[in-house]
Amino acid sequence: ALFTMYVSVIYNMAIATTNSEVIMNSVIILFITDTDEQVFDVLMVINERWVASMSRKMYDDKRDDEEGNDERFQDLRNKNSRLQGEVDELRDQNSELQGEVSELRNAIKSIRQEMMHINKRMGSGESHTWENDDTLFDGNEEKTPIS
Image (cartoon, rainbow, N blue to C red):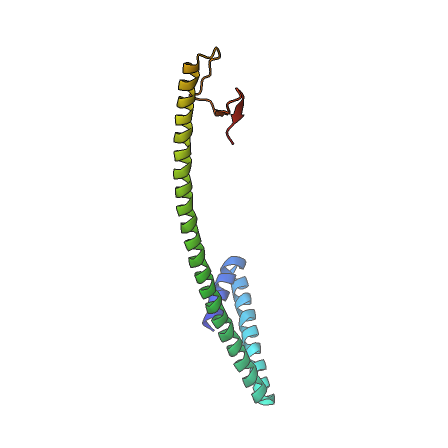
């Protein structure tokens, strides 16, 4: 009844533009509510067990839905925790890989410096600049891009 009153107030505020429309809408809502109650009373007189079983079934269905929602919510919570663990593990692996990449860059830089030193000692007529070059010297005077 309280919900019906709340809905009728919201409905009337949205739809009705005059006082007579508010009264007409209220009368219609009261008529429908009263008719619903009378139909329920008639069904109770005709077959009280059927009405009771339907009421019980509706209550059980609602409770089952709520329990099912609780189980699904717990499943989602468990899955979220597992995924969060996987994300943390991937972050750790990413940090390790970034460290390895840094070490490889330093090694490449060192190799470039050694190659420049060897090139100068050999007195090669060609000059190679290795400072900002993203290629490696493979010994055959060809450059192979770093991939």
